[in-house]
Every structure is written in C-alpha cells, then in structure tokens.
Image 1 (cartoon, rainbow, N blue to C red):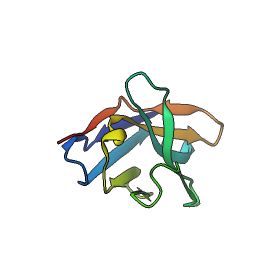
Image 2: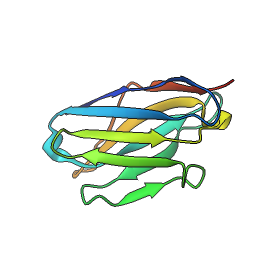
Image 3: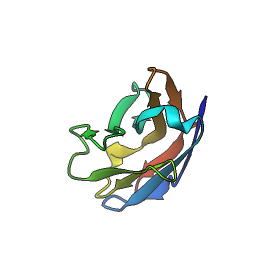
Image 4: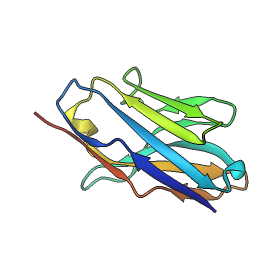
Length: 116
C-alpha cells in the first residue's frame, strides 16, 4: 500500500502562482509513476501532469508552459509548480501514483481556487 498526502492548495488571484506538494509513504519502493490530476465541479477528473521513475514528464495541453512537475526521489515527494494561473484551473487537485504492478493510488485532494 502507498499513502499520498497533498498540501499547498488555496485561493490565488488570476496570474498568480501556487506550489502543490505530495508526500508518499508506505511501500514507496513500488512506485513507478507519480503525478497530478484535477477535477472541476461538473467535470470528469483529468490528468494534469505525470513523471515517471525515469523522470520522463507528460503534461496536459492546457497547462504546458505554465505548470512544472518535479519529484524528489529521496524524500518520496512530488511537486506541482503552477504559474500564470487562470480561473479555469480551479479544481480539486489529486496526487496520484502507479506502482510497477499497475496499482493506482490517490491522495485525498486539495482545493485550488483561482479568483479575483
């Protein structure tokens, strides 16, 4: 089992920045991929960014050039630096991990609200 705990959400004005953090614990040696998903009210959960154990990254088109995912392998942490935030980025952001045996794990989510 892997446990994921997010932090860093909040309220920010359009054009502002936030940094989300996710701490993984438990059987962290099983983790291959980590990333962030988000779900806005009335919408399906969507992938925001992912990073593999080999540091390959993937981003949703809507966040390319604005968001950066990074990972601290020694601390079992994954981060999402979000710049130039827009109101449409408002959502609950979930930390995600996939093990080498294809098990999926989710955090409890952290709210990000972009509003003036």
